Amino acid sequence: MEKFGFQVIVDEIFTRLSAEDIGRFKCLSKNFYSELSSHAFQMMHALRSGDSLQKKLLSFKDTSIVVDDVVAGNLDVVRSKTLSFPNNVHPSNLRILSSFNGLLLVCNEGICCQLILWNPTTRRYKVLCDDYFNYNHHRNSDTGGIYFDQFNDLKVLNIRCYRNVTAARVYSRRRESWRTINFGSVNNYGSSGYSWSTGVYADKTIYFMVSNYWYPLGERNIVAFDVLSETFRMLHFPESIVVNPCQGHFLTIAKRLHLIVIGKSAELTADLLRYEEEGWMKVFVFNNPRVVDYVDRRRRTNIIEDNKWLITSIWGDMIEVDLSNELLKYLQHVDNYNGPKGALLIETTVSPID
Image (cartoon, rainbow, N blue to C red; front, top):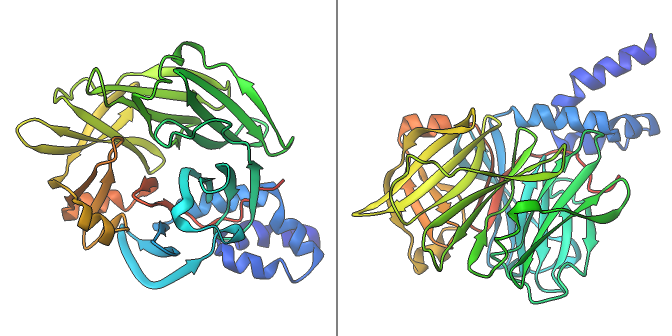
């Protein structure tokens, strides 16, 4: 009965605490450490943290890494925290490839393009490899994603493009090893003319936007990776979007896949669409989109600021949009978003190390 009572406390109370508080309780006893470090607890805590309207915005500044609160869609910098990356790597050398359940897949471009799995909340990290690229690294063509498979093994998908060939491999946290997987019919997007987005996880699938910014200008493709079968397939870009050229940016809202589409005809446009039943439905039209110039880029490093949202296009443009009250209410449920120089994430105890 005593064991049952302790388990109820862990499941119903501790899973609702902050990751920082959980770290303190781990120090109380071996029993606390064991229970609060278990995979089951980490998953339940991450699930409940993801349902909260409070998220964290991690931003790479010029000389530091800053974490701010995002509450109900608004940026709150009152309790900003400054972090150091493992081994004091300079922020200018870091690039986020994916974020998932409080973990970041980060490429250290300063040292052999190390691939690092990092929990910025607990400060724990794992260097997955330092032979990430044995060729010249192309920052627009190499990407990845993070997921749990059906056996609850944390895995990392790494996609590399070189000499017109696309290759994929998967890292297993449990086995601490890599293996190559078949890319199938998706293997025609490996040339330097194609730009790959970061990976976004939704409904047991990791999605990538692949655009051609040379010829044919405006070609758009969506590559989906099923995390259970570990196979790739193609999805249609929204057929209702007739503006050309246009490009997209993935995010998840209330755990559902969404797409921001930026287009240019007579004027710049920005629309928000939701993916459902193998099709796309327009949700909102963003107000007053404008291209952010170089001076403003240096000033703006946050995704959200003064009811304005920054969108990073796959071609490297930055677009700023004004948020109406209705749109801001919808966007307060954003789970996952990689923006300029950072990412929106939740604070969890999920460990990069098994």
